[in-house]
Image (cartoon, rainbow, N blue to C red):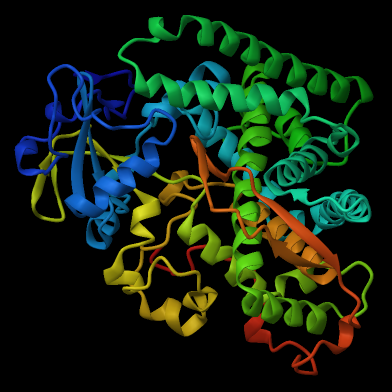
Length: 510
């Protein structure tokens, strides 16, 4: 049945718990074979890789299908037409369910986890949106560069010792420090630690627990893990409370995200974020602001190491645009168009947030064919939408950054590339993440040649977000002059190649 918590003027329910309540013709939608009473479609399913299981079923069953786990059934869509229809903000809204709803004990009604009938997300969005403007990005840029140089200092030490580097671990350290410093004036000291900071450990614990809740019929079966999760949540709360207390004690900071949360009133209503809401938003930014970006960087570095010709082309662009500039400026990062396409393509193959849910605002028909009741919802399987051969070709599994050349982007249908979600509830920090990741890739390409481990085969770990597992790379320090890279064209970068702030999905329709 539907959960109906509402506010005046908004009667949209939170969504049906199981698909049979919201899809009148659910029987028409295919499901995996060998469905078992009580267990549903869990035969052969993996508790640790449910997303990758679902991708396999998507290939077998087509652009709309369903899966059942115990007493709950879920509808998945990934076809381009279906995904475009669900992107219609007039008919569909964000649905908070499954693992996302499982995070509400951690962050409550924060930007990412608020139900549509809750007002705090809009308040926080309006207060914080200026913190992601072009001017704000330019102000964050020097701090991003400083953290990136801490990474290269660490990698230089590993290289000197003859060791390979732990890509996911180091990208996690990098992105945590970046969002902590730029957003909240805090330094976790990640690169001075032998192990990940306890904040990261607690964060990974809560994400993993939220994922595991979807694989059992009752939380009571995870009683021991539940106690660990409560301890992780308490640690996250204490860490952020200390951070906020320190800021209040100093009487203010440099006008960063935390200052905005504490001091800025809504431009229309004059309302301010409550202390509890501040805590929830800070945790959300610390978690979401580094977890997804670290995954995107890790996948991009993996593919660069496997494709030396693509890496050489990106490196030549860095040499041409940055030259011998010791600290490239904000605009010089924005001009790294091919490096940005490398990142876009990595996010196409492995969007670190691999799905998002949408629910019907009123009774409707999906793509004119599948009736849905108000509150019915489905998961848009982004990782499969990005592999749709009708959109991306029969070689959709191949890593090819040229898919994001301007002419190729213009030729594609809208709403076919969704690494940051869609609509009003899309990721508020997408430009922050894209600038940070482009800067870091540029710096690493400028400084190192990346060599893969010949024995490594990509394994993807799932904890609501995606990350390469066990990825290590060997480094070689570059010796070629930066400003005279072979084949690099001379002269300034044309204006049309400047990566001005824009929607990362590249289309006005998105």
